[in-house]
Image 1: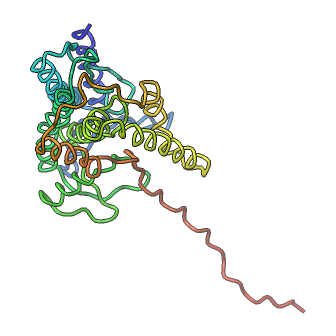
Image 2: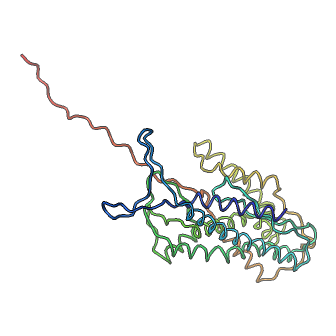
Image 3: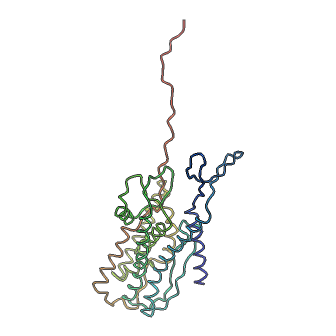
Length: 323
């Protein structure tokens, strides 16, 4: 089953990557010598169809798939190696394909036997995944930004909101983004964006998410209060926004449902009294703080649509009655 799911995830990420990064076929205009996109014009139906370079488009899909699966694999391998180190029974990583999502996957998980890991073992297992994933995701973002360019956000276009850490990296590598600008995506940069987003999402300190494990190991049962506050606060905020007519947050309903079904309470470890030590405590809080630079509440944006031209009216003139 793990191999089948992995192969399906490979296929779904290649498919989504191809759709995200289709490359138009270019031809040379004999009159001007300029390279222009190849299009088929149907005069009868008044349609214009772009002809795509399928070889390059599929290659872009494969590039994205390799990059994002390497990041996800590193994340889950970080968890898995720690379970082996502490002799905690666990499954192999299970990748989750989702070809009808913008990223082609819902990530990956491992299942470990409860009641075996003590506090220190649980902490090490939980924190190793996000840190290993970031070791891959941050270089992907760096390379992708270095091989991209900054341009204006076109009216009516859609894009992916940049986490704060990506904004910083764009400023360091290229230049700071100005209002109304964004950086163009390429397959590597998009895989890096997915890595940052998934890592920050996993670090939310609720239930069985990595952040829930880490926070429980740091503060014990008080983590349940934090989890309930975050869950019901997010639910209330989403409902409030929907009532106001702002539906951009409704996409989180699936995540909230999954979190609610899996449970907000973290089960006790085999021994909650095992000390973590100062280095682990500091590392734990620093890792949770990554949420503030890696998470975006609205992953997608839409450029402002141009205003329709104002209707012009003829200037008023004095009219005199003719005799």
